[in-house]
Length: 99
Image (cartoon, rainbow, N blue to C red):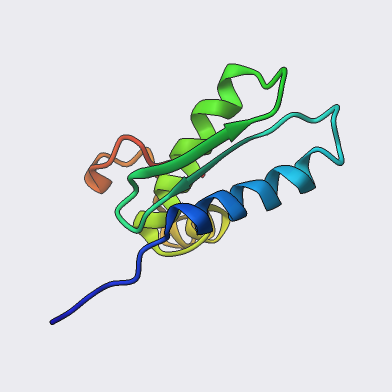
C-alpha cells in the first residue's frame, strides 16, 4: 500500500517556531509565514505583530504555489519567464498562484 509522508503537528510547529525565531531578529520587518501540504492545503499560519495585510495573503499564496509547482516560488517564476509565461496566464488555471 502506498503511503505518502505527511508533516505532523509537531513537525509543523517546530518549523513555524524556527522560521518565526529567525524572522523576529528583524523586528522592523514583520513577516507572515504559511506552511502547506503537498496539495497546497494550509497546515499552519503565523504572522508577526504589525504585519500588513498584503504579506499575509501572499504568504499563503506563495506556499500554495511552491507546493503545486514542487519548487520555491522564485525558481517557479524564473522557469515560467524562460518559457514566456507568467502565473497570470489563464491556461495555468489556478488563481492562487503567485511568486
